[in-house]
Image (cartoon, rainbow, N blue to C red; front, side):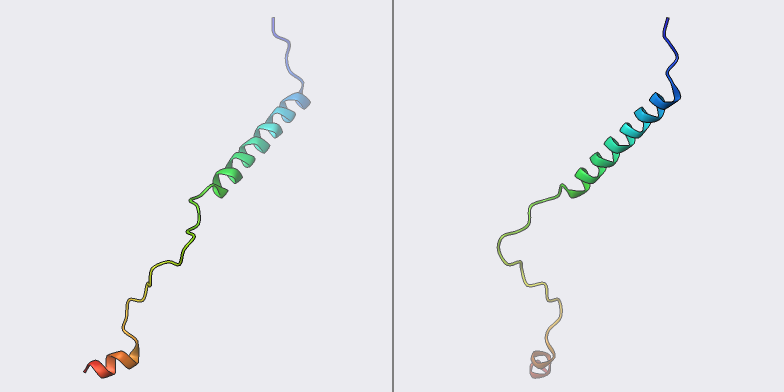
Length: 56
C-alpha cells in the first residue's frame, strides 16, 4: 500500500513545479523572431511640410 507523503515533500514538489513553470514561461517569452540585419523600410505615411507646400 502507498505510504502517505509528508507535508514537506508535497510543498517541495509544488515549489519545484512552480519554479519549472516560471522558467518555462520566461524562456518562452524570450524566444522570438530574429532581428533584421539591414535597415528597415521607410515608414513615413505623410508628406513632409516643405514638399506639401510646393506641390500645391
